[in-house]
Image 1 (cartoon, rainbow, N blue to C red):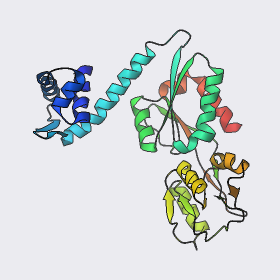
Image 2: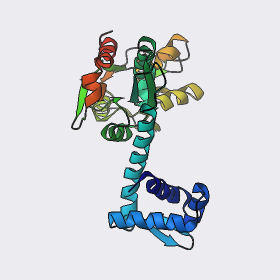
Image 3: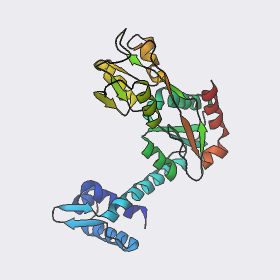
Length: 279
């Protein structure tokens, strides 16, 4: 198996056709067919159903597609790291949950950019499933996340917990029974504590799984919600949002998960993270 065959397989999947894949790759259709047959022979599995209308993935093909994409991404990163420009001695790739970027990911990235000029940096937003996969395949060296789960060769570093505060676009908004209340799903622990604190409240009409989106909704429409305090801070300072008086304040744990190399060889990364945790 080689990279060209992997790229051919992914081109067929993306275009849905051996003919269109051959056009994209600028090779003959017989070449595409031969590469696919070679791949299927190596794996001992049929990866694609071939019909007149096009090509579709088999069950084995769907499983292999994830591995093929990961191998292609790793190859691209390997090429990047082995052809670093003068003055760059390392590449640091950071994954970050979208809700953690403004008040945790951005400061971490900014400190590394400022203090380590010989470092090439990249940052990728992702949900928990994506961050786990990227760490597991080596596509990122570290991830800022809400979940403390780690696998072999990974280390969890507790960061400062974030506060979840009730904010509203209106001054004097009620703490309870706001018809425009927006529920922000901040995990199971928050859900239990929120339910206990607001046991007499109705189910929210609007729910978001992302605090960034919830804040966008409040600013464009109206309502109240529980976003991270750091995420809401610029809007509170500008008077676009307001803290709701006497409302319960919740907390949510945050973590930096590093792979083995980042955790042992890059003490500077952990030093910067520790500064953010304690500062």
